[in-house]
Length: 289
Image (cartoon, rainbow, N blue to C red; front, side, top):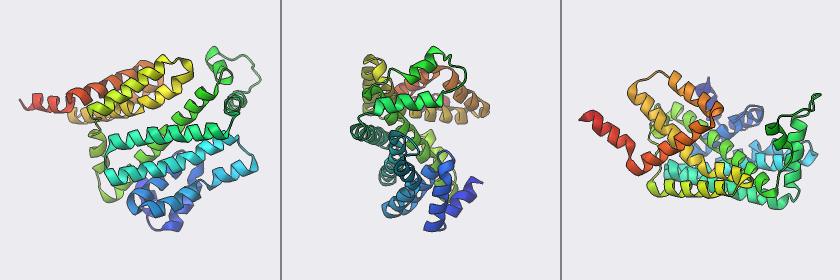
């Protein structure tokens, strides 16, 4: 089904625009269409799809149907995704692509914050509306989502959301591209995703520094840790494939990421060790000997 959808998108600009617009109702589909077109056809076609894909968010912003920060963040996802895909297209370098997604997402969030002096109040109101129910008793965790926001923490949330949405869209687009033009290529790229030691240490330092800044910087900390998390996932996917294990292991990993926060920390540690010690090469060497 996904291969057929990707093939339809590649038939022409009109088809890509139609799926990009329809995909606004389905998570990551519009971002994937934009990414596929940009990766395959270049910046001109990619920019056209970016404008069309962001049209629903522009209309919602103009009509006031959603809070301005949310609409602006949705628009930012498409244009950040467009630029990140250009970086990947030109460099074919995933560590550089991950770094670009962090930098661009952070810049986009700073711009949105500058444009919206009431960002903290808007985010608080968004979660209050989202959690409205007849039962007014909220758990402390949910209550924390409705108050206590500052401009810094709210901008961090926006940056984190833009980066995650962008990266998932780019990964899906790269997978579609491989399905059509390079079967198995995406798996090879993802399994080979390894940060160089300088990048890995930089992300660790940034993550630790943001974490030390307290609750106000927790989303900024999460943003800085994303490359380590994705690199750790790439390593685990490679290891599972190397061992020939059942894909149920990967399902369990993703469930653990949702249910056990410590599992994300272990993945990031694994990515750091792989970057510094080149675990893949060591494991291959040990197996050969």
